[in-house]
Amino acid sequence: MRAPPAKHCRPPPPAEAAALLDRTGLPERTRHTITDRGRLNDKLARVRERGYASEYEEADESVCSLAAPVLDRDGYPRAAVSVSSLTFLVTEPQLRAVAPAVCDTATEVARGL
Image (cartoon, rainbow, N blue to C red):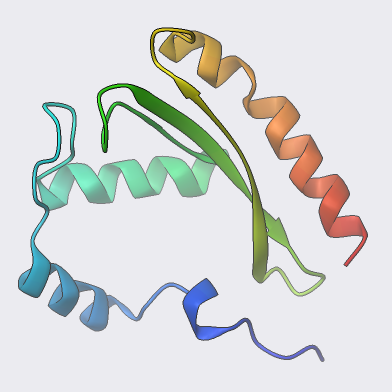
């Protein structure tokens, strides 16, 4: 069996995640930032379902990104493949359209682990 992922690559236990959010909150960085725990949990559920994460103007109103995990043979995340752009160059639908290529690339990288 392979070693477990490095601590920074694992999600924290639910109680630890809740404690972190209690300390830091969900500060608004832009008008698109998720600041509600319910919305965050909904988004994380969609991320798990789709197999990739994306954001459009959540951290900076001029930036968007999409990323997929590179999983090892045991299903642990070891790295990620991502794309980023400026929002005046890429619409949100255009960003989502590259998701299959990003996911395929992450799978191909994983084959090399």
